Image (cartoon, rainbow, N blue to C red):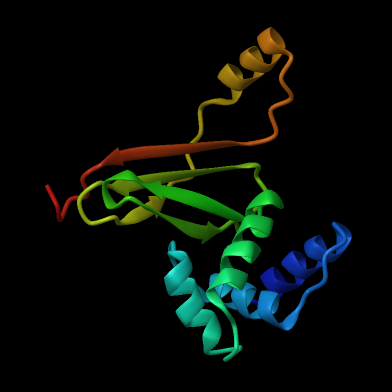
Length: 143
């Protein structure tokens, strides 16, 4: 966990942002988490490390971390909410299986989109920096 925090802290500083006590508490909670968390869940976890942390600060920090590709937003359409998961490897993309019934989220590493993305970039001239894949269905427990 400390290596991940060090990498994230260096990334923040290299982009001109400070690693404040509040941001550190949020990063520690993300690094300790095994799966996705809503902003409210993250707030509860991070407040154990920084008692005066406000929910607005969590939302602002998540927006910054998403911009820096340190967290990935997970859309949970059926639940009408978003959760976030830490990006542990700087791959530029992230993939999730999302259960539409219970909201369970699982990461999966498989990605066969490289050729498609290269063709798309060549055809459109768009500089593709990352992509996000979500496969929505029902987990084994909810089927």
